Amino acid sequence: MQRWTTPEPLAVPIAFDRVKRLDLEFVDMRRDAGSFTAYVYLNVDDLDPEAGRDHDNFAGSFSIFAPGECWGSEGHCDWKRDPVSAFDLRPPHHLHPINVSMEVTETAMRLGDPDSLSVTVHAARTSDPELEEGVLRFKELTVMAYT
Image (tube, rainbow, N blue to C red; front, side, top):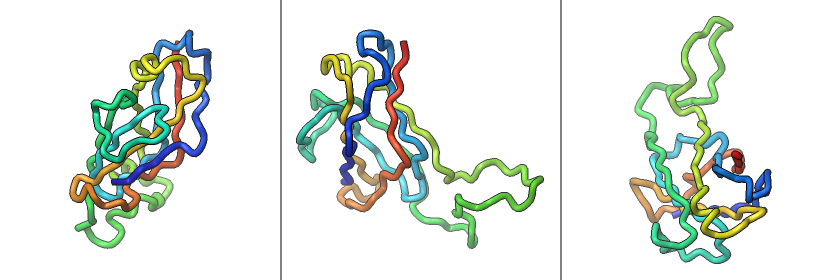
């Protein structure tokens, strides 16, 4: 299982007493390393690797379904490919990174009045949960607050 924690807590962009909804957004989540499930926890200092859904700081989970290996011809799974011409109307590649949003309002409210959020994610491959290789890959994590 891979463990990832925010290097610095994420600042909540508005006063917490005005927040009606709070979302985490994983920007440019990669999907080319196989399927996995991520368990997300908020404001935990030392999270037990065996922590599950019953942990007080558990905010939720999400799953990414993706192929583990490419069976197509050369270049089939090259999601970084450029259009072949200015008139290339193909849709984005099926492995192109996506943004994954997750609502964490209830957990954040239950934890009190945070002016910042520390996020810890446990990610496990569907095919081999014990593998600690980097399956959880994204550009940045942001917090979005709505009034």
